Each structure stands twice: as structure tokens, then as C-alpha cells.
Image (cartoon, rainbow over all chains, first blue to last red; front, side):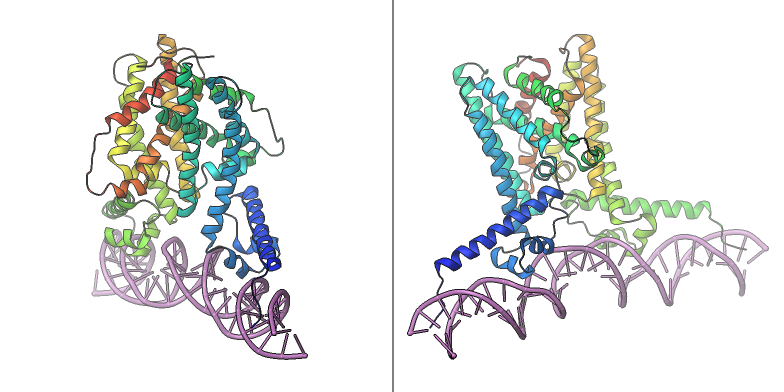
Length: 210
Length: 210
DNA sequence: ACAAAAACTGAATTATGATTCACTTGTTAA
DNA sequence: TTAACAAGTGAATCATAATTCAGTTTTTGT
């Protein structure tokens, strides 16, 4: 008898997995899911192609995990903005702004998360992702209704609409055609775009234009 | 010298093309772009696979045309609802309702048009499709601002938000997972869902909840 | 040092469908 | 009838990457 799984090995394996994940993440962040190749992820991570398959069932599974990770980051940021002190209206506005601004700042990944055509398992994650946002907003809207700063309404429905309104507003600006043609001049100022999106959203929510 | 293109031939060719198009349409309406096979479309249309390629450059081109066609139908219906007599608010509400109800009534095609992952050329058509809606709504919003029944706002931005809010609200109900699990009970009543979507949208537009 | 058990490797295989093309059939005008 | 040409056919080919797996290397406990 010999080999028995050892702490050292467990750690090494975990590191390899981690390396694979972050290289895959990087690939996707650079040019989306569609063009990310298992082969190049492996090369980038310094492992053989086959190794990927001892860490993930399939490419789809790997990508689903990447999607989940990327998503979690975004959702956390929005949650953070929502847990700021202040009334619900203010917090919602900050959260929506956060959502939009982060997307515009990392347009390739944002596009992948919001609108890139992806395989079914990844698409499932996308559904979950959108629901995660919707739940976050829903809670805040309910708080707002309790506080009295947001009129009574179907909180879930409104939050779904918010997600849709923002996502749709970003699809144009984020779509690769747009993003590429922008050549070099990165980070223009997003303020006007973001503001006009928020204007509609806040009015939809509160009935008050600002 | 002999064979020269004749009226009869021209017509026959056109008919074959038409047959291909409508069979492809049917396939997509039944189960989406992803599962539509060139081979089965050909079989269904009663032509050889190769024949498809004398009418269309590639599968993507065929699908782009199908998308365009399906899209046109929908956009026309919405345009029709918008050209009804009445004030802009009423007309917009009717149009948005039309959009949502038609989607719920033909969920497979609607999902394909709104959210199914598709090839790049088809995705391009989708962008155009969403813009077509946005333009329609934009015009109506501007009319409403002139009439005074809609407060001054960035009409284009608002119309984009409307498209997004509705599309997002439909993605859940339309997604194949949902659609399939509904088993048999077709056409439930969509009223409550549609109403709550419209509630947010109209308030976003007018600042007035109803 | 060694045998047992993993883990790693990457070239070869496989899967999936779209696309092609050598050949057959149909159409036209003389 | 026939020559000239276009349209139609569908089995064979091709393209693209994901996935596999027989062989190699590494790790471990004795």
C-alpha cells in the first residue's frame, strides 16, 4: 500500500483548479465565452488540456462556474450599495448606478453576463443571476414601501422591470460592435447615460421625476 | 443557344424559396433556432439539402431572414396598436400590452426572438429588432410630450427602458424550462402579469400610477 | 528502493452538423 | 430532337473543437 491523499496534494490540486479558474475568467473577460477555448485556457494555466477535465466535468461546467463567480462579484457590489445607510429610494438609486457603472467599466465581461449567447447550462446561471438582482431590489423596494418613500406596488415585478430596463439600456453601448469601434478612448464619461437610465427607473419606482 | 430564364421558372424558384422559408419558420416556431436543422427543414420543404444552398448563402443567412420576418410581424402589430386614435398614453399602453400578450401567446417564437442564444448574424438582427421597437415607442413618447400627456424626458432612453422592462419580465415566463413544465394547460390568463408590467412602465413614463 | 495509487499529458479520436459537388434531371429555343 | 444550360440531389466531405485515454510521471508509505 502507498499513496494516500495528502494535505500537500490536496493543496496542489486546489491551486491548479484555482489557476484554471482564473485563467478562464481572464479569457472570458478579454473576449467573451464564445471565443474562449479549453485548449488556450489550459495553455495559459500551464496544464495539459486533459487536466481541465479532472477538475471540471465539461467546458460547460467550467464556464458555468466562471459565470457564477463573475456574477457573484457584481451582485455583491450591488448588495453593498444597497446596505448603505439612508432611505430606500436613495439606496436603490445608488445600487442601480453601481450596476450600470460597473458594467460600463468592464464592458466585455458585462456583455458576456448580460447578453452574449451562451450554452444552456450557462444560460441557466444567467437566469439565476438576474433573479439574484431581482431579489435584491425586491427587498429594498419592500423596505421602501414600509418606510413610505415608495408607493405600494408589486415589488417583485418592479424589480424585474428595473433589471430589464438597465440591461437593455446597456446592451447597445456594450455590444461588441460598439465597444470595438470605440477604438482607444476608454472610459468616456458615463454620467449622462447612467443618469437618464436612472431617471426612468426612479420614476417607475416612485412616480417622481428628478 | 437554348435555356434562358423564363417566367415559369422564376415563379417555381420563388415558390421553392417560399416553401423553405415557411418550413424554417415553422421549425423555429416549434422549438427555436438552436434545434432547427438544415436537413430537417429541407425534408419538410420537400427539397434536397443542397437546394437550400441555392436559395441561401448559409444557414445563418436563412435564419437571419426568418428572424427578420418574425420580427416584422411583431413590430407591425405593435405599430398598429400605436396608430389607433386616442392620446399617446393610451396608445402606448395598448402597444405595450400588445407586445406582451402576443409574446405570451406564442412563447416559443417569442423566446427565440427575445432571449434564445443565436449565431452572430442573427444576433445582429435582434439588435435591429429591439431598435425597431425602441424607435416606435420613441416616436409615440415624443408625440405624448407634444400633447402634454407625458412629461418631458429623454424619449429614446425611456423607450429603450420600456423594451427592456417588458422583455425581462417575459424572459422568466417564456423560458423553455417554464414553458415546458406548464404541461398542458395552455393559455392561462395573462392579465395579471401583463397588468403589473404595464403598471411599472406607465408610471415610468408618466409618473402616474393607475 | 519499491510498489501502489493518483495525477498529468497531449496527440488522437469523436461528435455534430453544416456545406459541397459530381452527377442526374428538367427546361428552353432552335 | 437536340444541344445548351440551369436546377436539383443527397451521400460524402469538411470544419471545429470538445473530449478521451493509453502511456508517463509524481507521490506516498513501507
